Image (cartoon, rainbow, N blue to C red; front, side, top):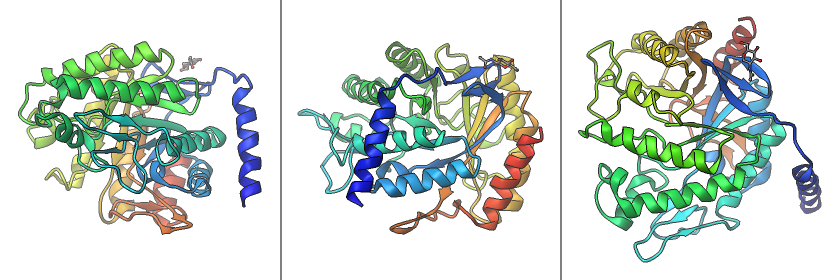
Length: 364
Ligand SMILES: *[C@@H]1O[C@H](CO)[C@@H](O)[C@H](O)[C@H]1NC(C)=O
């Protein structure tokens, strides 16, 4: 085992020093170009892959994702703590001095994901912070630096440390072709705030990321709330997000939106309209839209198939791709997290929502 690992690591570092062709992921009008190919792309999400402690498991999942024809993978690029756990953590936040963990149980775990993605031709979206409390999130900053999640966006000490963390991650992978895009956060919200709060933060932060890395795309990672069209909750501005206004930010290269009808108190039939309304806004802005998370907790195939059909059908009208939530696999530790939304590799759900979807994309 050890010698095999050392051998493949040797090959990888050799590959790392060879000049690589300028194979990048870019926006091309309202579509994405990956390694010189401009088309509609399918992808998925795996939050847990960034925290695996076994490189073979990372490679197994990444290999299965690539083999399935999925090109974009969104992974967690944060793991914020206030107290150091015994397991994996990326950043410890404290008013008396924060620390970014570049050790074996720190960003070296993310290195493994980037290395494996590079090897398998998979392109990564890496968000820098979580709005939600899982893996620390803005709450870990609030615990260290005070305020609330609503004042996090303007809390100077929180933002200083957030930028230090961004610089640490971006500098690590800025020359990698495995990066699809940097993402400011996972589902940033600012409940009850004027939408200017997130607009201003996203404008300034995206400009900062661009100053560190002019080559890779940058996106917001929001759920797509705040868009004209309907009066239901997701269309409204109560979470402090204005999708259309944010889409106009110069250093954001594409729009993101998510879709969980049952969590949002709307029917699954809400899906196609939600996709069409975002596609139209993206088309108008001349940037691609990525439906970067979507899911249901039951009847995956029948409920989600029409969403995919709508999304890929808009491949020249604003939609650049989609990424379902979430990838499921069987690792050395057993089956990965089943949160009800999971589509397991090799399952009939996977045939319906991955194999059939990709076949239809290839026939576009
Ligand atoms: C953009 O897409 C067009 C086809 O729609 C293609 O001809 C062109 O080469 C693409 N540009 C890049 C930079 O990929």
